[in-house]
Length: 112
Figure 1 (tube, helix red, strand yellow):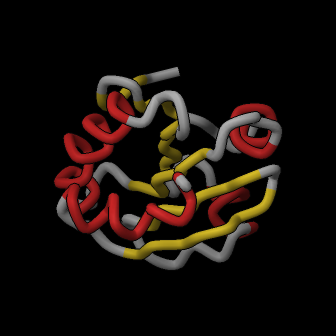
Figure 2 (cartoon, rainbow, N blue to C red):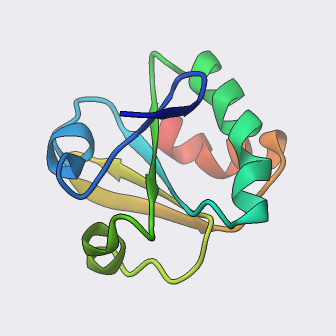
């Protein structure tokens, strides 16, 4: 398991069920790709949020090119797509990079 940013683990098709769907905390999944510039811009933002919100939210990322099964299953058509899962269900989807403050605003209802 590679870690792209501090506190952000990589998941795959193989372990998505265990790491995301069966997690006790809500999990923010960043659907990403190596060639995606906006995805790279989000990396430090997500690392900061992962550190600050570790008690309330887990953050992972999955490479869409290497993990097509999960990407198709959740209808991800663009990168970066951020999807929040709670109790095995997607409860929020955000497409595109955002600055930290705006992303935290978008996640307020999930973190409440």
